[in-house]
Image (cartoon, rainbow over all chains, first blue to last red):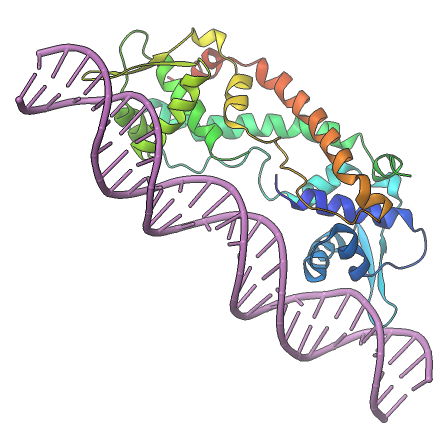
Length: 135
Length: 135
DNA sequence: TTTACTGTAATATTTATTATTACAGATGAA
DNA sequence: TTCATCTGTAATAATAAATATTACAGTAAA
């Protein structure tokens, strides 16, 4: 996984802390300490996935699109992961070698198993759970 | 995780296929289709961890340092992972924000949990198991 | 003493990530 | 109506990480 998971989780946690009022990308970016455009980009992704609502224009900003107890860390994980956790087997091994010939397939199967296990755990933790750890 | 896991797993799987004879880095690199120096670098790491034995000089090469059923994928995982699977929370969030102040710690705790789960699964699969999937 | 290996460092190249800049479009308020 | 403030998004630049390459010293067998 990459640095997007912490960022997405941070964003959603912040939003869960303010029920009604809209939060700006500047504020969010300031809390995470990243560039506002980068924050907006990730928010955009999260919005496309139905996790965040936005309002444009003056005094616009963001809120959660659903209750914090209805968003799990599995949603976050899937939002930011383009590839399986353990990375992709991106070698092109020698097809004349019995091992090389099949190893990518076998590694993919393993990764699928591991992903399932991770998702199960992540699916058991909601944003509400996570956010409740903070003061 | 990065591309090193597939490479290390490939190497150990290959070695498990030849009981006694030594295998050269050229052959190994050829099967994986990577540079021999890169293969030797990973092998060197695996050797330092007691998973591979090597012999220098003419007709030198590599063998497993222990039986394939005594090496698990958790060993491989730990050999190649310097960081937790999900990456490190490497932002330096705003310490004046209650969330920013503590989020790295909380994310680290989560990652530790997830790592444990992955290691449990990986620890249940040996190189022998994995290699037996191949013809 | 030549040949075929490993061991390792130094460096180059490529790829991925992250940051920055810029600006059009939307909305509310003076 | 026009100004200020915000989102949305693209284009680009900068940085960091992964991977590949080259080179060669050291070791051991023949």
